[in-house]
Image 1 (cartoon, rainbow, N blue to C red):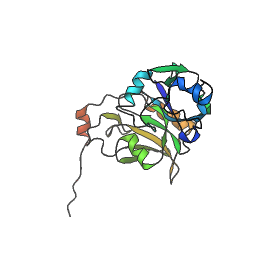
Image 2 (image 1 turned 45 degrees about the vertical axis):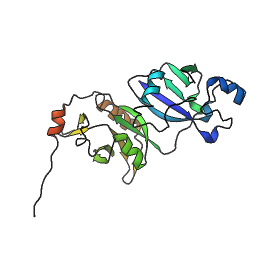
Image 3 (image 1 turned 90 degrees about the vertical axis):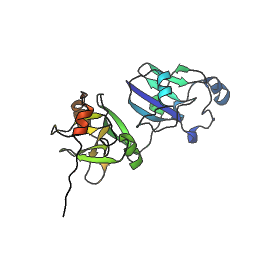
Image 4 (image 1 turned 120 degrees about the vertical axis):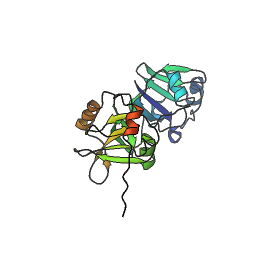
Amino acid sequence: MRVKIYQINSDRDSNRVRLFGYDSLQKFQGSSDVDSSIYDEVFNAEIENSLPEDVFIKFNTEMHPLFRGHSLSVSDVVVTPQGAFFCDNFGFKKIDFDESKTQKPDNLMRVVYVEPNRPAYETEIRTSLEALQKAVGGYIEVVYNDDDTIIICNEEGKLQGLPGNRHLDNGTSIIAGSFFIIGDDGEEFRSLTDEETEKYVNKYSQPEEISDEEVQGDMGCTFITM
C-alpha cells in the first residue's frame, strides 16, 4: 500500500511546534489545525502494512532505503489510504492534511523501484551518490537498457546474499536485491517519462520466485593469465 510520511521543516516552523503533541498546537499557533505548509515529504513508497502504528515501529527500527527523514516522532504525519494521521504523544490522531501545500527536495527524479517478491512501483529518489547507494543497499552497478533508461542495482548483491529479484531480459542473469530504473540523457540521470514509467511498472509488475540456489549459481568470475 502507498504510504507517505511528512515531517516539519524547522526553517518554516515559525511557531516552533515541531516535536510537540496535538494539544499544544492551539497554545503555540492559536489554532488546533495542522499547518501542512511547514511539512516536507520525506517518504512516498509502497510498503506492506499501512497502519500508522506499524509504520511508526518500522521507521524506528528497520527504516526503509527510500526514507529521507529522521526517525518518526511526535508531530510527524503519516498518510495512508485510510487518511492522514498525526503522530501524537500517545498514538495517532486522524486529521485534515493538505498535501498540496507541503514541499520536497528539488533534486528528486522519478524512477520505477523494484523490490524482491513485490510488484514494481513509481517513486522518487534523490540523485546524490549516497541516496543511490542507499536505495540499492550498497555500491551501485549500472545496466543499460535499449531505450535510454538504466537499471541501477547493487554491484555486490549476490555476494551479500541478497534475495533474487528479477531476471534480466536474456533470462540467464539475475539481479539480487532491490533495484530501480531511471532515465539516461547521455551524460546524467533524468526522470523517467510517463511512457517509460508505465512500461517498467508493467514489465516488473509480477514478482519472480528465484531460489537462493539460482542466485548462487549465477555468481562466477573469469581468470585471465598473461
